[in-house]
Amino acid sequence: MSAQTSQQTVKSMDKIVALCRRRGFLFQSSEIYGGLNGFWDYGPMGVELKRNIKQAWWHDMVTSHNELLTPPGAPGPYAMVGVDTTIIMHPQVWKVSGHYDLFHDMMVDCRETKRRYRYDQVVGRWVQYGGQRIFVTTDEEGPQTEQDLLQRALKFFKLRSKNAEELQWDGPVQPLKCVQDFSVVLGPDAKSLGTLTQPREFNLMFKTYVGALAGEENVAFLRPETAQGIFVNFKNVLDSTRVKIPFGIAQIGKSFRNEITPRYFTFRSREFEQMEIEFFCHPKESQQWYKYWRDRRFQWYVSLGLDSQRLRLREHGAEELSHYSTGTADIEYAFPFLPPGKFGELEGIAHRGDFDLRSHMEGKLDPNTRPLQVELGPDGKPRWRGSGKDLTYRDEVTGERYVPHVVEPSAGADRAALAFLCEAYDEDQAPDEKGNPQNRVVMRFHPRLAPIKVAVFPLVKKEGMVEIARDIYGQLKKHANVFYDEKGAIGRRYRRQDEVGTPFCITVDGQTLEDRTVTIRDRDTLRQWRVKIDDCWSEIEKHLQPTH
Image (cartoon, rainbow, N blue to C red; front, side, top):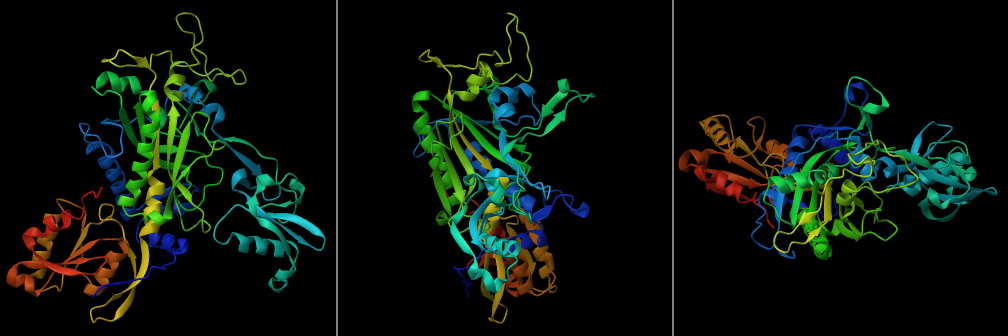
């Protein structure tokens, strides 16, 4: 019998978060001390899921790439290599890259509650009652935003729910930046009007010190992105390998941003992991490569199970583009914590031009800012504008020398894990041992991403079944993450594996003793079929291969 899958399963973040904690996907960092906002720990299931995502990305983007062939949609063949650079770098890197001066968010403070909010995340609506018109706000935009604003307005005007119709709402939910007069604004957690300060800049980099003394001369920063480690090693990669343009340098690593208001579970954290490629190409071909990487990265998520109906590829408007970018597209996903019709960023694909390499070579002079450090070169001129190193590329065939353009697909491993968790969560009905329908929670991970690939069960603990099951477990354990369980009814064991997303279960039963075959059960269809014991891994392995 097959499962009766509900296509209308409501993706409840409360249920997803509860499952993540109950089954060991994610925990609040330092939970026994009350937790630390913006930091998360991955449990036994979560670390396997995230590792599988990173492994799939590295395999598909780097190790399995055939540089002798032209991939579909690409302008031509290209090479891929990898690096792993340090979290703390020379502070001048961040001056030249623009992070020291420009990497900031706008924030507002509440004088009443002493809380701090990101200016662009505060939203609200105009409402009027008894001749008074105010702008009531919240910083938690989601499916319940309008209901939350209604409750706040009722409380402010000292009304009961039965009086809700007496409130006169004016216009839709809109950002706080649309309001000029803050004296009529009710802050997200305030009881009085006019408690919010005017917005001001807040630099997002974490500051630290290198060495024994904590003076300004020893200031350093935890990297806010992995990209700069690639750029400053561009020449090292060229000199130590035989790669020629076009080629990409990939890196997976931790980054840190001192977010004003981390939120939405792991979506916006202060410590996170990135999967980035800096793809170097000839300026005349950069637009073609930008389109190739934009489309290829979108299809990667679809190939691993994200519903294309909940994904979108959105080109940035001119007003959204970073100062260095000539084109950026975001791959976005409809996370359950967002209002219907809203999407959150999974990955950005940016056409960065030659900004980064040229900046680290020459620097960008800004008369309105002061250098972090000033070092005089042999010629007596300040070198703070750049490293002074030659970061151009010379084509050995044509003799042309130029600064390569860069296309950057930058993905978040944590956001990808969150998206795959949200996508996988489902509730349906499946028959129990007697054929009666039973509710179940099932995580429908793609087999490549599933934390556990296969579980092995003896049907009962007698007649030699346990010994055979343990032997199968030992053989499969050489190839993948496998789970063994001999406790409880077989139906309950199936349900436990469904809830962590194990795609296949192998059961040793009475027939195994007769013909050396076992039953394989599919998590999603509940289809069961028999295979010989010696064929178990080959049967499972074919489902774990990339499909693109």
